[in-house]
Length: 92
Image (tube, rainbow, N blue to C red):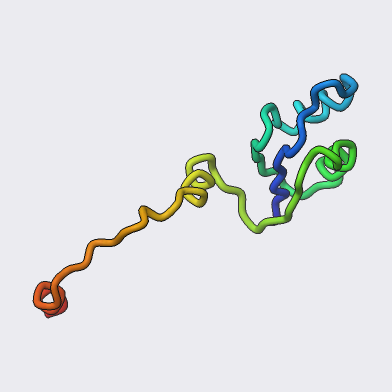
């Protein structure tokens, strides 16, 4: 089942109350916040109402907050190398 991945790019400060209400209905409160909603005409209509403020992409599965954070975590920048003798013993 496909999902919309919606990220709030621009702030709603100074915009009409109707626009901020649409963002609240989508679950977007802070800039760079990301939410996942199933693909449906109602959600698509809400996205069209705030299309200037959000970035939208279609993904196959929804991610939890922890899973989404793990995808953004950078590599540690190093790796631990084991001696060839130890690696050979582990395979035997």
